[in-house]
Image: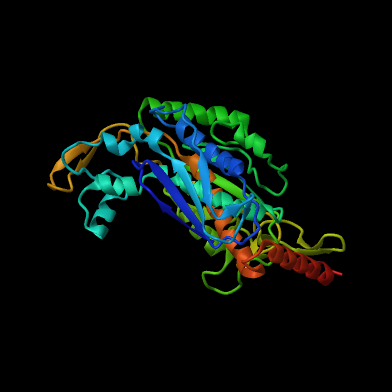
Length: 386
């Protein structure tokens, strides 16, 4: 499965084409819209501008689906962007000159594509297009859901405020999606939510931005996904690459690597277990679902660090790409903290990576054939454990 996004932040329409989707997969526009609403509400809530807060994003499925199921043809998704354009950062840039926005892709992209007008580059790489990433990943999430696989994320730190306990620790109670979604910052602790809100309020008063960290867990993943080869096929490399594609993510762990690296070898690994009813398993989950590049069947846990957004709400020193003279730049679209929205993006990107592993292992043309292959695989695993 693969997606391509078309459109810019000032386009009337944004679109995505998702190809490689097997036929027979049930697709719900309502489910896609629910994911989009989760993302866009976090972006609006933590934005300093508060513009267009009454506009709800809706994604239409234009092709590739008949009677609620995929046909095997590319799926075209479209979102109306007209109501969002008046609040675009780029429409409020100076009419003359091409100021480089500090901390963004402007300078590197200008050199790469030989385009001095940074507003053109900004429209192309604007985070408004992430709405279509969320929509496209809804297709991958639907495929994983067919096999009982659930992905949930939560924010574990904003600025200097961190949760006291690991929400995905072995002995932690199962995290409910409702606990996360009711929080304005997607933190499962109500006490830490209030502390994070206070941290954000202080940053907003200074028109500054905050980074943080999030964690996501994948439940129901079959054992044996990924490859044991020392190449890009391992589950770590593929999931890490997908999460690293998100702007601002600058570090990823698949376990508490810093703490685990301090242990001796006898205490750093999960002891395998065999239970007649459950089959092969592990007595613990220190490796967080991965051993040697292959999934263990235990929950897969990924942690990521996010740097503060470069969209600082006060003037910054820069230079004009056209004249190469110094200038002051101030973004028109300030957003204090994007960590909660980035966590939602990570769920979708990880879903794409995992969905492709399933299609490679179990087939990629028809959902009925894929279900049959998965069932045969599960029977083999159960027989092997007897």
